[in-house]
Image 1 (cartoon, rainbow, N blue to C red):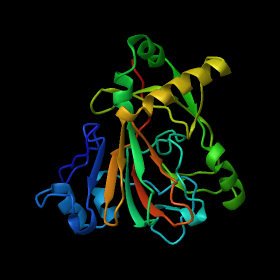
Image 2 (image 1 turned 60 degrees about the vertical axis):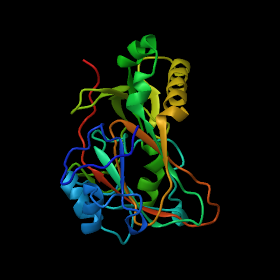
Image 3 (image 1 turned 90 degrees about the vertical axis):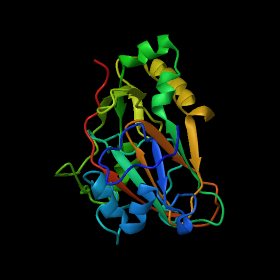
Image 4 (image 1 turned 180 degrees about the horizontal axis):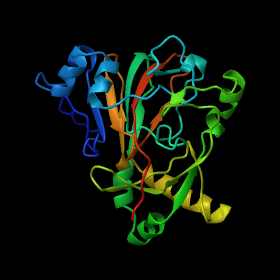
Length: 270
């Protein structure tokens, strides 16, 4: 999995660019003729996102306060942690196509983010396991993480997602193996953050299969790690990656702003 720049303007977060980075303090680590870095320097993040695709509300249920509607703020002072492997909002019928993240406040040390390449993870499975997971469906449930918040802190009235106000988080089913709508390539589409179980098998079988897949997805050879600096902007394809934010900075504060690109319903192998 490589870190590479997307040409601009660009409205295709295809899996050939699993994770892309631009910016850095004073543009360090980016060449002067890097088109993505140049675009990031010239336009605000929301306008930049609009050049890639249609933006969603920042989050289906979370109220990020005094920020634009498109922004989801993760503030460690308000329990804004993402220290579990996950793919953004897979508990929705149409999860985001891609995500864009930038730091606002960084701790003195720590706070790196890791991404796992779920397409590479699928390809590196043995053939018998690939045949097994190709035919499976999994349930994704956001109520475990956000259900209490939606009911108690938002009085059952969340934000607008796909044109409708979110009033409850109904579990949804997605294929365990997702076919990328642009490249046709397969990737594993389960994550510890939101996948509750696999349909049509026993609880023990479901747990065993998911544990096997999670251990495989997060092998070191499938992961890239990014050390943040103010001015960075990182974007990734949400259809074939998972990510994890290290919570290793003690009482220091971290504030990150994320925006997401509207996606489509995941489709499995024919």
